[in-house]
Length: 235
Ligand code: NAP
Image 1: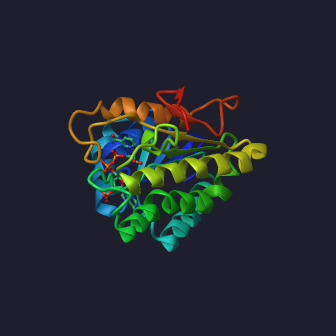
Image 2: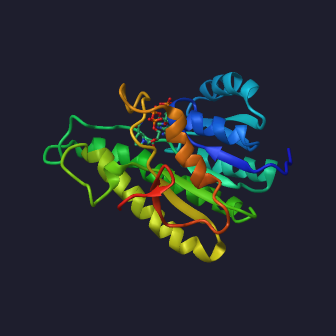
């Protein structure tokens, strides 16, 4: 299926902020690969969202911890579209507010990094050849102010450290890809009322809007930044 519409991919898009990000990108006319760990979850989200948007939503199975699966989806996307314009690394786990760094189970920390850091990293590596074939490539790492070293406090060790590392990865990728005009930014969606955020947070529409802003920056837009609602955040 070839298309002149921007082709976007969102990980962890069957629920929460990822789902709403996929919806908003499709509403802008993008062709969106809506990815979920379970194929049926991706299909269900697409069935619910597709009638409401102008663009095309396509369900795809993707577990970001499975290297073969990530590479396989990159290959099939290459065959199908020949490029990727927007990659949103949204999938994440384990907002471990009840844990402390002094006593954290390091196996749990390692599992968290496997999704929140290495999942984003391997997906970026696998899709980089496709982003290089885009006229306006954008990479968005969905991060959190929990990963800000400036505001770092105790508690939530696995999650906070995974997001600090994701922020560092954002800086590395942005610098290495600057000459190729691939804009790479980290975005905190703010506190959002999802399964992860719990009750009391803001609406998913606003959290996703800041991600969509970074995913649709003009060529003159920033790279290597950390943003919430389009405004810079302290690293
Ligand atoms: P959520 O409701 O818990 O959704 C997480 C999504 O990630 C789900 O679709 C989940 O799939 C998917 N996922 C988990 N592990 C995966 C894997 N190995 N491969 C592929 N997908 C996987 O979380 P959310 O609140 O929407 O958060 C989205 C992003 O925003 C995350 O990066 C989070 O850290 C960030 N964030 C959220 C808040 C907040 O207040 N909510 C604040 C700051 C930052 P399953 O359904 O299969 O589990």
